[in-house]
Length: 94
Image (cartoon, rainbow, N blue to C red; front, side, top):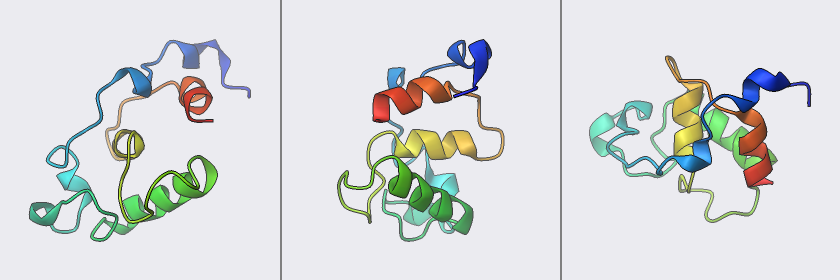
């Protein structure tokens, strides 16, 4: 995939625990109302979530919930997000 050997040295998201609703509250327009649902996400995270659901997990659970590692990957894609191993993520998801 052209990611190089550096990618294999980054943290694997699947080795982490799934983030809680409180830990992802910053992704919501109203952080107090963060409930793990897609409704209320800031537009940036909403669009990214739709992209990931379409390409990686098209039939994994309800489209209105942030399931599994979707929370973790969205946090990593936000400002200040730590790098992660894309190749390991894709391998585990596909």
